[in-house]
Image (cartoon, rainbow, N blue to C red; front, side, top):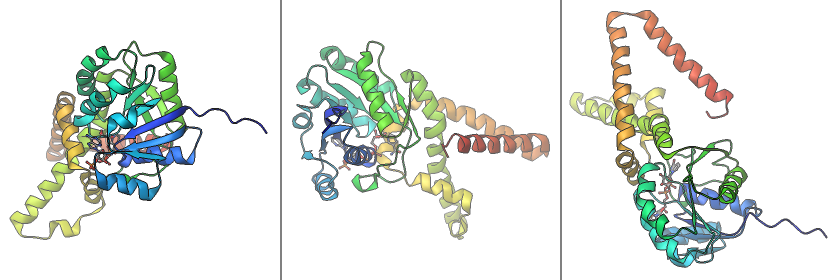
Length: 300
Ligand code: NAP
């Protein structure tokens, strides 16, 4: 009988088994080459009970420090505003040489909050990651094992991070089905401001505008929601705490992208006002070309 190769991690701990965390656990349960033991930790008794019912972890804990003590890798999957607080709970008990990661959608403010903790715990490799995958649903029931398939996962490791730790986190995300790219925290936050955060801001806003209009005109505006508007409502169904934290933590980059967008939207408005067909058609063609390239890259 041939020996199976050792799993990538002996003990992998997921703190916050919601949409993202429970998807990692599900994939880990399906592919035991990822970790021998999968531990889920959540502050909410309801979430812990549901994780137990779903059978997506080998062990379930309520206290992050207890969960993290024997971990080779801890991934914090809680809202952006709570990441550094959870890191402060687990870092003092983590093993020397262990890896700490998180999956927050904003990186600059998380790194700022983490800097003093990293100085106190130089033996822990901190590797922030952002899987560019998600849905408008949250909680442990929302996750699925193929969520990260063919999606990008962006890593933003600090300059001094050991290469072996980066390689292991890269392997982890590749085993989740993702493609991995490393970049700086500033670049990450500007990219995400335009491809994710601004579209959510627009979706939340346009739903409010349509609802106000329906109130003002006492008419059934929303009953006739066509496909364009329906797509916005799907995005606008996302979790309020998560998006509050993202907007407030990526304030600068998001406001910069919003200014650019307003200028471009005004230019389109002017083209419509003056009947400038060339500008209108060239913008629509550009949008179609972008959609086609996303489909070709399997990102649509
Ligand atoms: P989620 O489904 O709401 O899951 C978050 C989980 O964390 C919940 O179970 C929550 O419990 C728990 N939690 C909150 N504060 C905690 C704390 N202090 N200690 C322990 N557990 C805590 O959220 P998600 O969509 O998976 O997002 C998680 C992270 O991934 C966020 O940082 C988000 O920015 C990032 N992200 C999200 C997406 C996306 O599309 N959703 C994509 C990429 C990255 P309660 O429900 O009891 O509060």
